[in-house]
Image 1 (cartoon, rainbow, N blue to C red):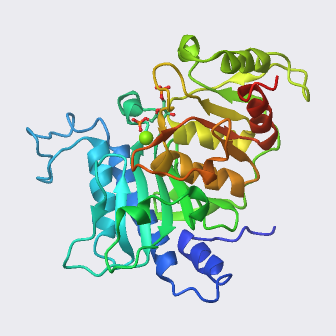
Image 2: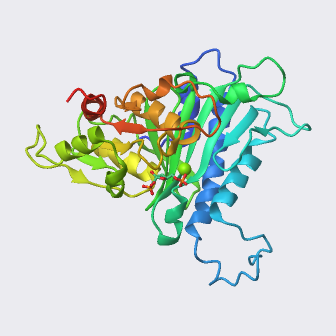
Image 3: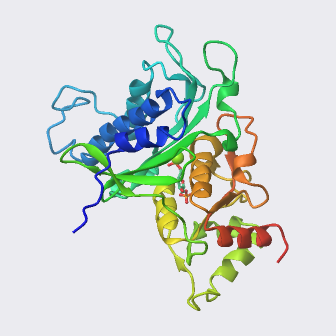
Length: 335
Ligand code: AHM
Ligand code: MG
């Protein structure tokens, strides 16, 4: 019986690096740093809720460590895994107002890391999947230290992106521009092992994911699209299925594997949309295009947005190519 290749994330990153003969290994090492941070966060997410039971006293746990909210913890782990490596010149994250400089005592590198440390954190207490999302850009500013301009680059300039889902298992999915690959954490050996090679999103799917509680706040074109999508699907004759977890990473991942569409449009309450360009939307847009899908604001390709603000938001329509194109025709008033 042929055995499957046993590929750790480290081996996979090194193999992919061979496609870039000029690569120094710095970028590969950065991806590996992210995988390391993901393992630490995963360990803590798995223990969520045990604080009270295992005898955490006051604000300290049994190891004498401070007990903090998981999203703050995740942010801190990522920062501490990255600040001293000499690979990054600046970071920015959803949780912090300004860019995060590399401390003066450490060297700066050629890359920029933008991340959402724990997306969907309102789901933590209900034991629902949550995730970390990351985007990697190249340094473009001239000085030694990174600047805001390094962070405010359009998504099509990304050289890497990915996410980690802390779900029934912990899965890391990434692209470095050569397809989309998924790795499942084997907790017994502490390694991410290749489980989903070269993921392709189906051209069309029959799942739609949207917070329909917002219907009253949508504009007419969005309402018409959702009504339309509830009709039997052209290909299968069956109506679409509604699936909405409320954790972007988990909703995205399901649709990536099964095909479908996720929408978080602009509405009366959030006229610019809810999701953040730099930390949530750009990385998923890069991944979905690499997997053969599409990501749009309804009027523009997500990866072409020129960000002007670190915490800029955008409407997001993302998923299978045909579904996204079809939704655009509605949102642009063509149907
Ligand atoms: P967060 O970054 O504060 O966790 O918010 C982002 C989350 C996404 O994971 C999810 O897709 C969306 O917010 C859900 O929003 P809503 O509750 O409005 O449907
Ligand atoms: Mg988020």
